[in-house]
Length: 234
Ligand SMILES: O=C([O-])CC(=O)C(=O)O
Image (cartoon, rainbow, N blue to C red):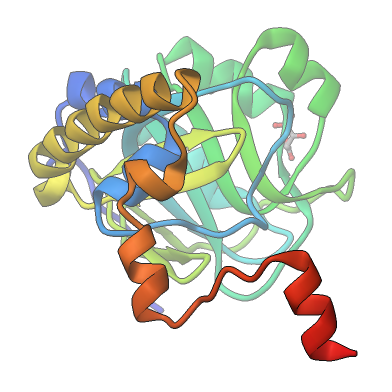
C-alpha cells in the first residue's frame, strides 16, 4: 500500500449532515433502504450522543496511530473522523488528547474500527466516540497508511466526504451523492411514524395500521378458540 494523504476531498453539506444526525441512525438506515449500517459491534464510548458529520478517513496499522495525527490536520468544522485499521485490532488508538485536538477544530466525533481509551475523560468533555473496543493498550506512531482514502468498517465502504450518522444504536454511513434523497426519505419516514404513533396512542393495532390481516389470511394463519385447539390436540 502506497502511503497517501488526500487533501480537500469534496464533502457533503455539513448542515445536511447535521439534519441526518437529528433523524438518527434507525431512521436514516431505513430511509436509505436498510443499508449503510456498520453493525452492532460499533458502540458509543458513552451513551446519549447523537451526531451527523462529514467523514475524514484514516487508515492505520494495528497498534499504530500515526495516521490519526496526520488526519487531525485534515479535519474541519462539521467533520467526523473515521478510523480503520489494515487488519483487525482492538488497541486503544484514540483518547482524550486526540479528542481535545479534534474538539478544537469543530469535529463532531470519531468512529473507530478499533479501540478507544480514556472513556471517562471523553464522557466528561462530551466528545462523542464510537468504537469496536475499549482498551487501555497504548500504541506506537511508526507506520504510514492513508488519510482520506476509502476505508471499510463493518462491511461498509466509507468514502471521505460521506455523511456519518451515529447515536446509541450505532453508526450509519450515507454516500455523499445520496444525501439529498436520504434526507427527503427520512423526513417522509418521520411523518409516517408520527401518524402511526398517534394511531397506537389511540389504541389502533399494528395489524390494522399496517394492513396485515389480509397478509395473515394469505399466509394461512387460522384463529382457533382455545377449547377447539385443545380438543384437536388431545
Ligand atoms: O496519544 C495516544 O496514543 C492516544 C491517546 O491516549 C490520546 O489521544 O489521549
